[in-house]
Figure 1 (tube, rainbow, N blue to C red):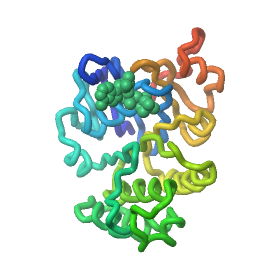
Figure 2: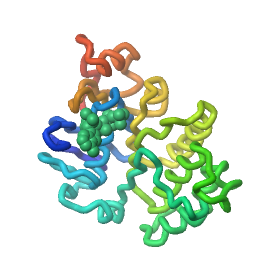
Figure 3: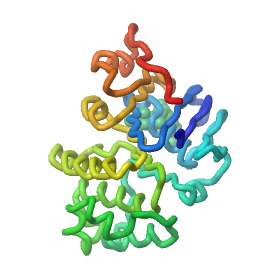
Length: 243
Ligand code: ATP
């Protein structure tokens, strides 16, 4: 079943046309990796889906309902949660308090502080630590945990591994694997192409705001991805959209 549909979306920053005529679909249980070079429009697209950036044209449909005009907090209530680049925790609160604040007005569902700490064992040990004192990897895990506390149907993850040490990225992805096994639907922005291909069921590549490649991760070669990523000719659409 289609959970998210983005229809002919455009988004601007002033005169800059950051997202151009983007249409995509995400089915329930799918892991869609959004890839593309710096400035390709990934963050703007994710923010437009979450209601944090107003599109200039097009529509966003979630569970069949048109949510294009809905403010971000109402989208969270519908089950859409964004983990933004930069984590943005309450630094004066502990890990557990950060989770509980997010869970205060949560939708009913499987996620609570104890199930989140089950999936992120590194947070379990640090749950009484102030967010300000966490390592980058721990902060990222807490930011994802905080989004899970709202019991989302769809989790939007922006650049989870940005600025993290390789060992922290490994630990984080082990936790994400547990989320995937619990059939959470995820759209993930990931700069590391190999990791994006490995973790996702489908890939969408953006170049200068437009989709240049889209298809099932298992059917796409690394060459096709790098071609689409850098805008080299010959990169082809690997597969039709999900229906
Ligand atoms: P990155 O990996 O660097 O975050 P991205 O693919 O997520 O890149 P965006 O951050 O969406 O790309 O940026 C798309 C374009 O919009 C870029 O040219 C960027 O410089 C521009 N842009 C992004 N945010 C703003 C802003 N707040 N004001 C002006 N221009 C912006």
